[in-house]
Image 1 (cartoon, rainbow, N blue to C red):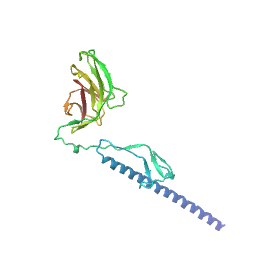
Image 2: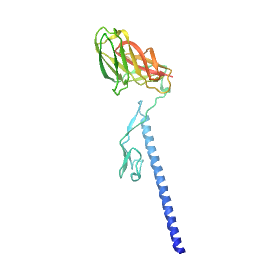
Image 3: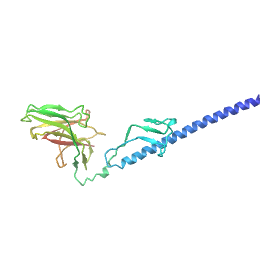
Image 4: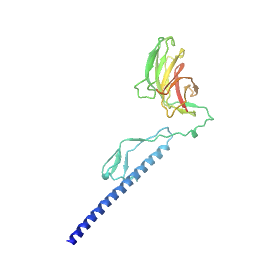
Length: 254
């Protein structure tokens, strides 16, 4: 009886040791996977920060067993990955923004706009009676912008388009909105007899004290405009201008 009881205790002890061993092995393997996954993303981040751009997106295709980032698919892959017998595969795009430091800005040089590509997203027709025009549901940076042209501002009917330019404002003080609006007309209206009112939806971090709009000339030089109103609750501001064509942007001052 004692011998049988001893055998039972040995078996129980062996089972306990086996269970603890499996738990320990699983924990270590999981930690190994997490560590290697972390190394993988650190490597992506390093590559991303070496690029000269405002943002960087790198497609995570897979984590290969032979590439120094080994995962064990049989124990499950991380969230966002699907496993097979050889690797964990991801189909999503991983992005790491590249933040520009103010230390890189040379304020001894004047601010200027480096033009990119202009994309016109919506066209309107307006005449001497004026009108209110809104850009919405375009999935573009100028969504939410309204243009109000008062009665009598124009002496003839014209077509004009609203859009944006994907260029970069450089050497500017304050937080640049990273949005550059464009109003364009092939009829070259230029100066109107009454100013049109442009109201813009803002995107900003923190609590800006003011918004400073700028007109941008064809050479990229910027010219300050006067803000007429700023509503922090609705995150909108407005200013007036006499000019079409017009390229404009703004900064947030804290």
